[in-house]
Image (cartoon, rainbow, N blue to C red; front, side, top):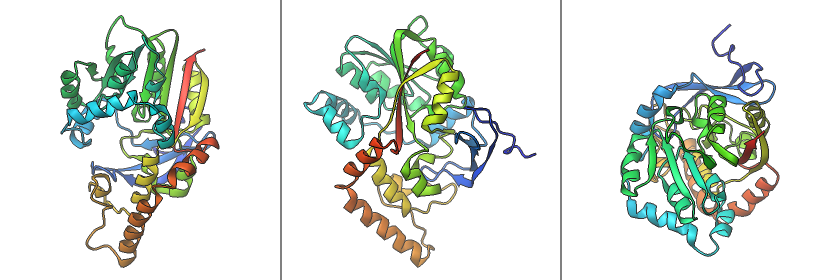
Length: 332
């Protein structure tokens, strides 16, 4: 029996079999070829071979584009949350797929995987107190600039000892974690009575995933280690001691536009994609005439789609077929 065939599903324990044989980092060009395995019972998927906690700091510091930081732009972005009609605008654009927007004044919020720290600044603006955990060492400069409470490392390091939180959020994070059940159990112990955990992550049950196949941008190999649907994640959460209070799909309009650009992209293994740097989809000089026309059509479709993606995405979300899930958990 091969190593891939012996993998067991983290949601239900059933066997996993190959779903995509060869896939690689088609955004930032980190080296390596991977596979995606799918559970035969609940549909949960996993990247193989997997990275470990020890692999993550080097990967993110070398390949994730967060080395040059515009502090003014970060501040301006965070201040948008205070504008009149900000919540309605987030709904139209599908950017309300982030758990920290549920904060209430005076609450203590922990953002695990806080990234650029915009979420921590937004929590401040909304009247909450914010703490963050981030694996990328490049984030230290942002935290220091804005005097933010950020631990560079992992939640497994027991950051901020003695503190518990009213709201713990993982915005597009749980898919990056090598051992999601262990993380959820650990997070559960940091909740105040009545506290909630809110997670956002890509939805393999989305219509877009089914249409896009291996071109789906949310495979995001090798950074995404686990790939969830609403059923499989509910099973994982219940095993970790939670009740699912709410689950819904929300699709950022930007994701759909990036997906259209990705259809015309052809980044080889180890090659960074210009589709993600803003200069257009990657097409080799040796690409066929058909590939060059595919590239042009994808670019043209992206331009024409700006006014259409919002209504289409909101309909997909209403049907539970959106590209991102937002899940609210409480202790069972």
